[in-house]
Image 1 (cartoon, rainbow, N blue to C red):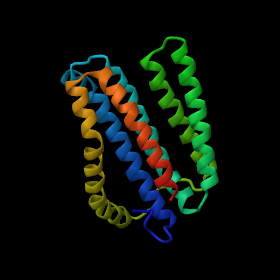
Image 2 (image 1 turned 45 degrees about the vertical axis):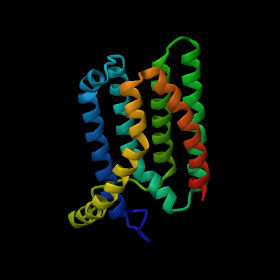
Image 3 (image 1 turned 180 degrees about the horizontal axis):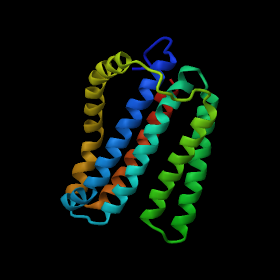
Image 4 (image 1 turned 90 degrees about the horizontal axis):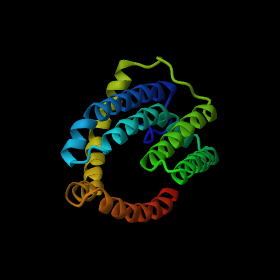
Length: 198
């Protein structure tokens, strides 16, 4: 909803930061607490620690998203591109090093966490805006009011895009799902590069 505003003020960014950071924290804690039951549902106990680590990524994303919005609204696309290149290169390098040295699934998790943390540090360092408690309750209510309509669209899109992976992992197992998801991500990456740029 902040993206849609012509000239959002600091109070809009502040309200947005605390809403997103709060949601990131809550969703991270939910994933952390439900990691065991989810792994039991899928019949794969090895995904429990993976989900627990992934919860940390949700929390770091919550702390950096508003800075990304601020940089986008201020047309700092070079900074955002450098952030992506740097975080992906370092995270990928760490992940490849660990995979070559036999860390298996842990290498993928560490790669994602390193990428997310470097992205967080870069966004905070590159943005001159800093969050503060300088916002009005009415501003938060206004953002949440607009957000509740957008979340329905986002949830529908999520279910549409991820239901195949859910059912694949539930009925076909992790190996088949991994292969399927790799192919799906290649197509998604091509689409994101083209559509995101436009």
